[in-house]
Image 1: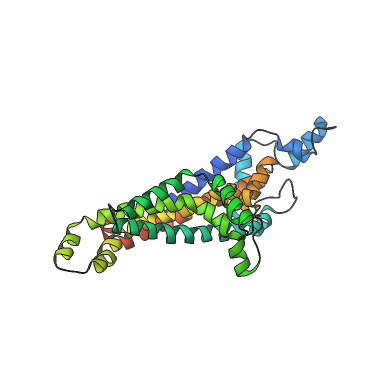
Image 2: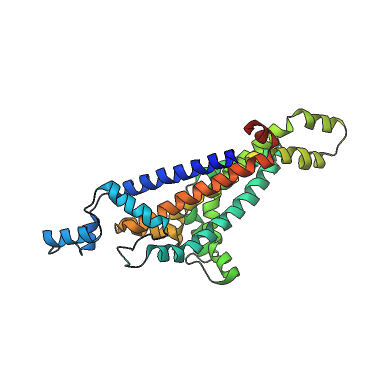
Length: 314
């Protein structure tokens, strides 16, 4: 119970610190939101500017604004958008499903393909298969997501016409078809990283004494890989998959912009360009919260997969 409370306190402290950094960073961003709210600099009078600052509490000190914003966030009130004049919570709720579907689809791709490629390279270690997997994943890791998006659109979308290049589709199969290229471009770098971690974790597990003893006892190689090597390598593999998935919320910004998806990534870009501070703060806070929650869950699951970690924690 003490460990759980300590972990919960750490999560809350991290969220509090992250929320202040997000608010302060947006507060210090170039541009005056009061000018935008007043309708631009044309015919802007000092009286009008002072009125707008007072109406939106922009004339208060930083810590007072932060305290007011944090209190409203705790009550699920994320403010009102400067640009759309709608509740920020409604804007985020309307865009979040698309981003969540994209992240989940990309996660399935990099887990299946990345872990599968890593297992194949580890089993066929020091062969041409291993070299091919390492070379392909190195190439995939070196390609930025926006370059991958352009290449995928050009080849599979324009030349072959297999997949749509814009929009998120409707229905299950329509959504899968529309999100295939964005998810693949988002998953390429993660696939390479997960593949390398899987390969190395299985190589370390295969070098342990009990694996050598099982092999000397005549246990079939397939059973050794499944019961001993892969099972002992699950800890770092699951940890890396969780960390990569947590970081994908921020990675959707480029992909959603490239494919014209109406997710929170494109919403963040639009909010930054128009100085829509409440929306930018809410989206950034959501991204950071998602990362912290996922990494905390991974940290809690890791001891269940690797008893050695559980014993060390005690």
